[in-house]
Length: 208
Image 1: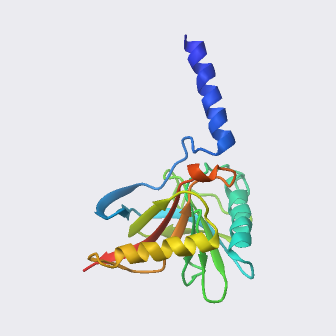
Image 2 (image 1 turned 135 degrees about the horizontal axis):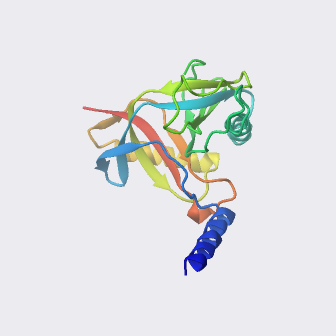
Image 3 (image 1 turned 180 degrees about the vertical axis):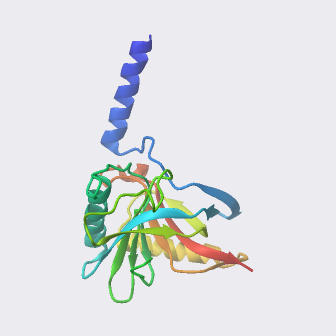
């Protein structure tokens, strides 16, 4: 019986891999502290990220370029040749980018975009290996409170813009106010069936 269950478990995991369902991927820890309609208000603790800035590319190209750079780092492209576990989400946001500042993607007025992977909780800035690629940087993301709207399906630039606008509209009547630009988080690989994808748009918030 144990052998049968082991085989069945392997089949299920393989099927999940084919359709892109997450299986055991670590995510940054958070606490849900409130709700605003369908929005979750989440408190995130400080966390470590590896990030890179891309210039002169549209958002779709930039996320691919950034993903390759930072994925190269966690798959062994570092001074210690250490492999680091993949986490979720990858994030895309519109913000002023500081070079000293998930996977994440941000875009500023000059068209520069930031792609970020969050590191597993076991790692610190002191223990993470140094990237081989000088365009990949390790940073500490401070604790923050985020309003989050979850959705499935497409995460095209137009869809993300619509969802971010919806997020801000839903947040408007509440006692929370946006305290920065929106960010989009992607939890699944690109081959995931659209209706199985977990996407989120979020914005840092304060309360009045």
